[in-house]
Image (cartoon, rainbow, N blue to C red; front, side, top):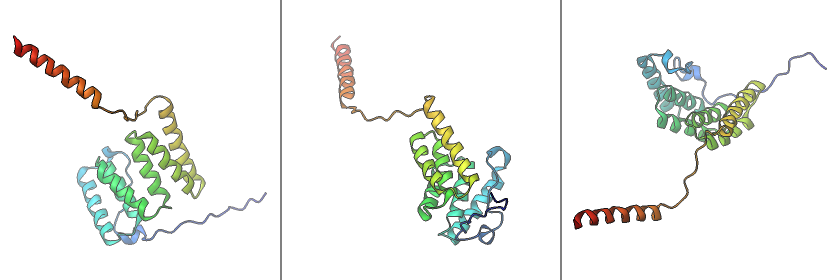
Length: 175
């Protein structure tokens, strides 16, 4: 067995974050550690960087994370989905897209997206992050945090309720 350090190929981004704009990576995970003004500045600079470099999945991923820190779920979902559409082989975009579904407790979709991220992992660290996220999603699913799919028709209950309301109206009007 060799004691030499094995090197793994690293995927180079389309646009480097350093050339796209100042301070673009957002280091926060906790929204309470950054002021709303600073966050708004970073979101504005990321939006401009995305306009300047529309093919950068890295920038869209950072923008999606910034929107998530700002509690703007729909914009975060759009940005992360755009990042995964731009580069379907982008691990971080896929993992953060899956994490957003996990945090929204859309567990079946989060599991499917995390499995995609697991396939895209390029090194042991990324693999361990995806596995931990998948483990947590499956734990929540197993312990009962489930969304029951609603696939039953509402016509019969609606007609029964309407009939009861009409019967009550007729009964009170008759007196």
